Structure formats: C-alpha cells, structure tokens
Image (tube, rainbow, N blue to C red):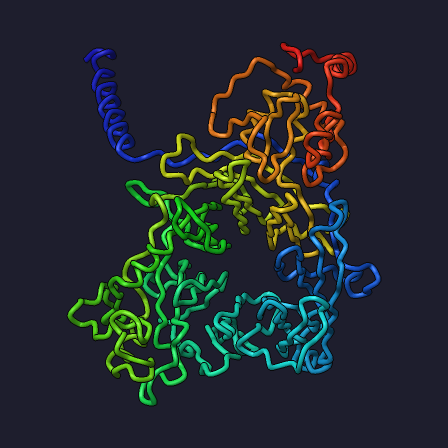
Length: 634
C-alpha cells in the first residue's frame, strides 16, 4: 500500500467525525458568551465618589470598621444598619458627601455573658440585623445583642425608642454572619432565621400580631428546611413568600447540592388542630427555582444570591434574581426573572414524594391528594367552606406535613437567563433593578455587585419584541481602599440600593457605603458618536451639542439610540474621548454639568455636566497628546 492510499482512510474518517460533530453541535443553541463592557470605570475614577465609613468619633468604628449589615430606603431617607448603630441619611441633601442626618446608637450590655459563652470580644457587639418599617411612623429593629437577640421600636422621624424592647429569638439571628429576612404584613411580623445559639434550628416564623397565633415551620424536619440561607421575603396577594437556598433533599447522589427555593405561607394561617400541626404552618409549600441555560444538557445556576422586590416585566408582576453556580463548580453567575403567576401555577401543581429512602422522587398521584387541596388558604378557592385552618381535616394536615415540596420547578421567563457571566474569577452576589430607565421609562437596567468590588451595569433584554440583546454597559471597580480598608481588604459588595430620584446607586461594603452616579454621560462630552454609542438609557444627546443625563419627564429636544448595536454617526471623536475622561476629575453629580450657558438657562437640571470640550479645545488636546481624530468634534 502506498503512503498516499494509507492516508486516505484517515482523512475520510476525520471528515466523517467532523461532520458528525457539526451535526451534533448545530442542534444545540450556543452557550452565551461573556459580554465586553462599552465603558470601564477604573478604581482611580471611582475613588472620587463620596463614601461613608461611620463616625470617626466612635472608637469601635475606628478600630473595627463600620460592619455594615443592611440598608433600607423609605421615601427620601436611607437608613444604614451596622454594628451598634443605625444612620439616617437624607437623600435630598448634598451629593458631594454622605452625612447622616440622624444616628441611633444601641450598644449591648451583655458583653460579659457573651464572653462567658466562649465568644471572642470582637463578636460581642450588637449587630443590627433587622430594620423594617412597622407602619408609616415606626421602624422595627433587632440586633444580635452579644448573642442575646433583642428587638425595639423606633420613631421613624427622630430615631427615638418607643415602648419596651422584646425578645429577638426567632426574629433575629444570634450571630452577625447568619442569614435572616423579615417584614411586617397585615400587622404580623414574618421572619426567617436561626432560633438557637448553635444555629441548628432554622425557622420561618410569625409573631407580634394582634389576634394571630404564633406559628413556625416544623422543627428539625429536613423536608421543610435543610440548612437554609434566607435571602428575601415579600408580601404578595394572600401570601408571604420567602426566597432561599438550601441543601436539596431530592438530589443526594452527589452529596450536598444546593438548590434555590421559593416558599410561601398564607397570611390567614391559624395553624392546625390539636392533633396535627398545632402551632405550625398548615400552608407551607416550597418549590425549586430553575435558572439554567437550555441545551442538550442544561447548565444550571442553582444558588440564589440576591432578589428584587416585585416589579413589572412585560406588564406582568415578576421578580428578578441573581444566581450562581455550586461552590465546587466553575465560577458562574446569571440573572433570571420569574413571573409571579408562574410561581402560583407551580404551587397549584403536583406534589413531590419519596416512598422510601432508596427510591427516586416522583409526583404524588392526584387521586392521593386529599381535599381541600393542601396549601390552600382557609376561606379561599377549594377551602372556601373552611373559616379557619384549625378546622382542616386531619388527612389534609398530615399530607402537608409530609409533602411540602412541589414536583415542578418554577421556570424562568423565556426559559433562560437574561444575563450570564461565566469566565470571571469573581462571583456576582447583589442585584438592583431599574425597570423604567431612560426618558421614556421603557428600558430595564440591572446593577450587579460582585465579591471583588465590581458593579456591572447591564442593559437587559426582557421585552417581548425586543430587537437587541442584553448589553454590558459599564464595568465599574468601586472598592476604595483608602476609605474601606480596615484590617485587610474585604472587597465583597454586601448591598445595593437605588435612589432614582437623585440618580444614584448606594454600594455597601463591610467597612463603607459609596454613592455612585447611575451614569457618566459627561464623559462623552461634546462627542455625539460616543454619547449615542454608549447605549446608556440614562444618556441623551441634546440639540445644543452636548451629552447629558436624562431627567424625569424630559421627552423632546434630544437623540438616543439604545437599541442599535451598530451605530454609525458622522463625527468620530473616540481618540479625544480618553483624554477628556482623564481631565474630567470632578465626580459626576446627580444630573451632570454643562458648559453651555444656553443649556443652563433652558434646562436647569443639567447644570452639572462637567464637560468643557469645544472645537478650539479639541485642537489643544491634539497638540498636547499628539493624537488626531479623523473627524472634527461637533
């Protein structure tokens, strides 16, 4: 056999294998690639943004840092809960700095008892873990209180204490790093946390209501809760929903695998009968949240990290969540949205059961589901003839106690994430959503915080007839070591809070809170091409020849091109743009600054665009840098 003839079969085999590979891969949709940012905000730039790290007069803060716990925005006030303090910041005040208008100080008196229990002295403080509105005039706050959880009421206007403090057990965790959520609904306080010093008893709990019995989840039952991490709680309709991640009871073949869940309870639940589920929820159900990339083999983002409140997507109530991969997997993050009616539909679907410890989990046959349907609220739907859950038949109560898990997972909108990131070393952990961005209030912008001090600003494609894909608008490095670095860098972003009225995003680290403008339109100065190509819903090109931040209600006299991915314009000033950014040393304020006197007179809310670029100055920049642009600046 000649060498040529011996090679021919190998070549033919290679072609066959290649054609087979192409036929297989062509049937599966491509995995979404990580997007490149249109604009990058460096640490040098972000260090100009105002930061708050506590009061320097407090010795503990000077020694240990702020120890941020959570933020709460009510109208024009932002409340920052930390160790021993709650700070109230007036959002309508100056944007040049973050100065608390009021301060609440609540220090523990149980330090000695805490240390006797074997805790380090640095742990024996009062970490404010609960801060929620009780009504229009009262804040409800709970602190760890040196491992002796305690709760108080405070006047919202003055931060003065009202009434006596109450025990915080089952309402607040014992330790600052334990997860918890809480909210008032119908006068009752709903909480999810750990109830004991050893953090062995996780609970979803209702208390403090007038006329409503205290209720909780079944104790030490892994079918109800198994090592949960509580993320969010919302009131919606007749229910309170809890969003969490936990060890999956239905998936044990590969050890401990984390799944994301949504659980719900009826607001009018009064517990079971003296025989079954007395003082326990009779309406507790939970379902898996499915955030995955479809294909021949689904790629799952199983671990819920953060969740929005209920918002409108396609005109329907929905929530948007930030998910990550398993801890022992490749680092990946995704944003998925879920319609509330899809969640309701799953809770009205089939239940899941495991007949023995060795058998697979399967749907419960419909003929084995008792009536009224388990999980239904008394006085509603199938249970409309029952005035109270205490009168439910025993077989209904026994069923709900044994089968709280739904068979179907809640699908995401479009059955896929609206944004993914899988090639970064950092993990995305916090989400804030603006569903009405831009002058026409018709765009959705996601702000995604990471464990590496970055915030990604994403233009999300979640419109039913959208002609564009999601776009990474900005990659912002926001960690400020000069203001946030105490005892080593902790670059994790712990909270995000939008202040749309003042065009700001508050970004919380352990040792500081930073105020960041929602956009940097002034960077594009008098360059029309760069302004429009930024695709930023917050930026508009004015007829007066300047890039500015859009203000609410401004709907004429400007250009914007958010949805186009291949924008072409007559002018090209990309080369001078970088120089302009370097010379723009002042931080962006709420609505930018303009050098145009006409603009300042006719549109006063654009009085802060910090751009001084004119035709004459563009030539000066060329002379100084040696860089010429192809076209003249407009």
